[in-house]
Length: 245
Image 1: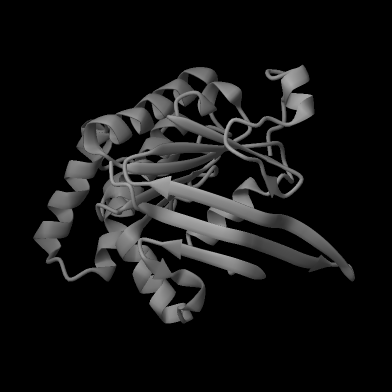
Image 2 (image 1 turned 180 degrees about the vertical axis):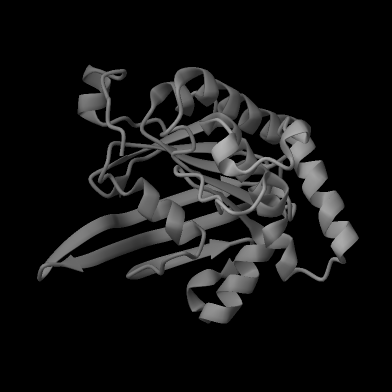
């Protein structure tokens, strides 16, 4: 594992204006992630964890502070440059899967490859390889409606890794799954990290999910707490959170 972080944020802030009020979603976040790590960003709804993940993915821009990902100051990139950069370096897994209903599993996975220079046959083979990696070789021609929730999320993970990205970013990847499907998805993510060296940053409110990661950082009311520090209410009842958002 390299000593040089591939994600570095410094005094990162993000605020939104809602109904004439300023909402400080993130206040002064300092984070370093090294290649090959599996980091869980943990906190209840409204703590700022998804905001931080979206900033890392360049899906949003910070209000203040610095963010560097893979040596790139992503806040300075134009919208078109951001799109190219993200497609090349980032795989994103959403809570709601975000699969296209009219496309098969194979077609959903192949979609990001259409922005590359790969030929049709190469795209086809890459998609098959990604589906095999997530254990869905027998579901390539199935549509999302023909899959279980856990299978849909595994298709979404295959889509996220098909371009062999440097970073896999997961926003509540088990939030819409039953316990068995969640366990399968978390086991898959851990395997991608340990066996394939994928660097993963996962947002979650669930302590069970967080313990699949190699490191946990907590957020509380927009503040990213120092490593090893847990909010007071979490220390009092660490397993009590039933937040689903």
